[in-house]
Image (cartoon, rainbow, N blue to C red):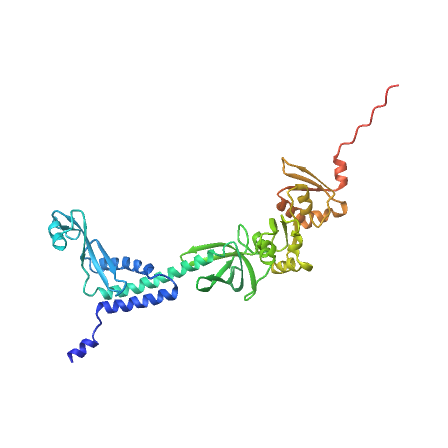
Length: 389
């Protein structure tokens, strides 16, 4: 009967530790993290637990056998010539140190095992807390690391929910080493100083949405991915996705100006004379630019040819209007553009939008004039004086 009772009794401490270590290793493999990440933290936590529950030594360290999982506590004591009364927890005499090993000298640190008999139970309780905490931290770190890979890129997801402040939460998938991870991205509402949502666009749960990842923030509650529907680079990335010539570097987007939800202008260029940069972006029958416009919910897109000649570039930027003449002031970065009278409103655009976007695209201040405006502003020639008879 005694033998039976021993078999049914409590397992030895190192067996409990080994079982805990095995479970830890399984979790680490599942979460794709190294056991050392948790074991190091666990050793630190056990030092705190030892001091709180036992405190028979002052300078201590905990060692965990990575094979058996057994916990051991060591008191760290400095070797001195003689130990003063009351400092036995910190120091060991040279004579006593030599009883352990003849190799010790003054100033060395001696590790003396002080593992309490029931320390395994304390270790197991702390281990569960530390493992849970560290696994959460590791998962947050992995999500943050994966999320930074999509920073300044576009993602496609579905609206999961819209809160009372009209903030939209989009569920997107990001690629991890072992597969895909679903994260919740925030599309902020109309907030000061700027909004990430185009005006007059409405959203509903389960709606598909393409967004630009403008920010990835790590916080106490985890990783927050902030996305935008107004950023000019949303247009840039959509063209990179839809136009192979841009993705391959054959066609380059030189500049973009955008008023989200209404109109964008992009300036494109190719160093290859055999490549039509504008045609590549428009696509056959407008299929490429129309696809991008559809993703932007009908936003109009003007594709203009970039030129290092400011007169040519400014002329192109005012598309779809015609231009008669461009006079530039290099010092002031100012351009006076003459357009036919019947196209002045087209050049300026509704509420000045066309000329405003052209100015942002080119980096020049643009003043639209009609031919008669130019004629009136020019000084009249003085009549020639009659020759004296």
